[in-house]
Image (cartoon, rainbow, N blue to C red; front, side, top):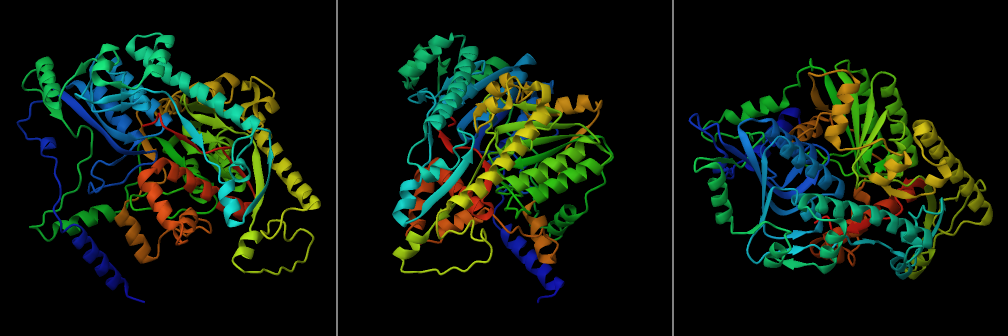
Length: 622
């Protein structure tokens, strides 16, 4: 084994090579001592991917292609409070974001307008979702010959039974709740009657929200907007004629308009509110080590009161995470979240906790771990839940006991139910000429074995177990929501899925609002005014994680990781080229397929899970 000195030398070599290339600079963002303070227009270029959890990128390696929702919303709110900022400009470039994220960014833009400031948008092509977001602007212009694909909301769910049939795999599953259709993707080629009813109920709520957004912003009636959607798409001149946009102009003409409105000396700040990336002076050999010293210095003990944010993002799994390059994980691991909740509960400077959930559920046992940890927080301080794009099944399980639940109007939530079963793979092995001979001690020792379907006695054993888990789930909801529920629990549960707006009517959530509203409420509940917003655990960048790995101080690996699904796809020679092609040509469908395989792996590991009944691909979110 190499000495620690040798390991550190390797790190230094890696980092020097990593940063030996040119460092990009946004020349327009550089300021001088003589810079005019007013008037300022804050420019936000909407591109790349929006993440829920923080993005730690001290050297600007993502080049603006990845930002966290909280950071983007905070920058817009900062511009609204800044007296030097007279307007914001939004330019759009196919930003990848969820439906709930879209709603929260739109709310931030509306708050900016409430401050009496103007919002300008320029785009080269929009779809229903992006148009619903950006039509809130005071002035929306598009480039010549661009198009507006205002065509509505399209969703599709994934079914892989035919694929399983081809490879000789049979799905043997049960569910608690007529609408709990999480296993139908494995057992059917199309949805059952209850599942289709639920999907249409959900899409109705989402569609109405999009229509209301457009009607409110463009001064049209609901019926007018629906007619415009049914008659779309539109070329730029047609969109202008229908008063869907305000102008058709080139980027140069758009900039000229800004100077006309705010004067020739207007300062368009392209990096407003962004932290400056650390720069290495290659002429100074010690500058690199100075930056390393800053990065690896232990964080100062917080002194200020805080509202803590704990993120639950992705499928809920047991164990601990394996962070990726920029500090994000591919799932919500119960060990990490439990520890974060414990830290928040014990930290006397943390006066309230907001648990931000963007999860379709997952492991029943891991969900119970998180719920129990959240209750320990509630014994000491307020616990508020903020729901993102989705907080369903296990994602709702961990939320139901909170002091207050916020959801976006277009959030997907509830799905109170459980599903369990296994995949029978004997026919597949027979095709390969492989025969497995099993031996057992105990009548149910092979309960989850993949060699055969459940017999009647085993089916009853599993059904009784699932029924017990389901009753616990409903019990948690009844206890946590008590008098808020508008209907008996059995009329709300059964795997039914709702939008945030529908869930509000049923008493499953308390208020419509985003992360900011949840933080503000948490602070008021804790009776604090001067406070900071603190993420727990503190996000780590790539270099901190690398040093942890080399020193042996990294997190313990989980027994189950989401890379298993990726390995399944990439490890089969005949499948890997198809999956690679899908990722390039059909990224949304490829992601849905990946989540389906992730679900299969989780069911294999646990037998009974709490997951959303379907993985939907929405076209309107573009």
